Image (cartoon, rainbow, N blue to C red):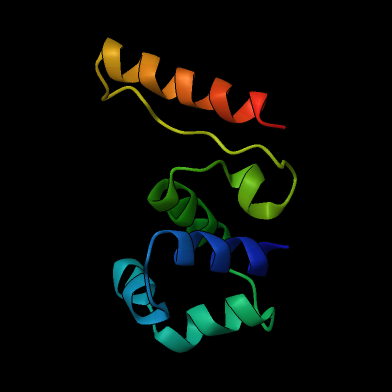
Length: 93
């Protein structure tokens, strides 16, 4: 589960394994091992990954299927647009 989440988050942020490794100051082979499920990130890297990708550690660990987004930097108008967009997508199902 952790392996899939790391890969999905990396890809959705348009990062290569090398890009992610550089951001975390580790080797690309470490990122590859995480994504292949050969090894798991330490607690410190779980926290760092959660902060980097703006998700909860529970989400990364597969304990929650809910993602969250920090919208504190948005204006009131932008926040309303985000809510409107979410409601639009919900109504399409």
